[in-house]
Image (cartoon, rainbow, N blue to C red):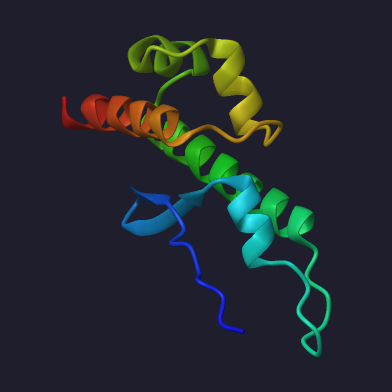
Length: 111
């Protein structure tokens, strides 16, 4: 029996010349579910690792831009508490929030 595979929706974001793909968590879990004969993939660990990489990258870029969390949050139009949680890897931002943060940092660097 042939199963029709549904196309996975995703968003792309470029940070420091490196492209990242952001997908819905349920789609990620489906893509990384264990497959017979291939060994076990722990989707949650992999997801947390990608959250932490994004968090580390945003923190690094903010510091390189010479911005405080408060200044970046205000410039991007997000709450400073939200930015703090993102940088600590406690939450994963949606694509719109990442884009706001990256645009705000780029605007600061262009001055």
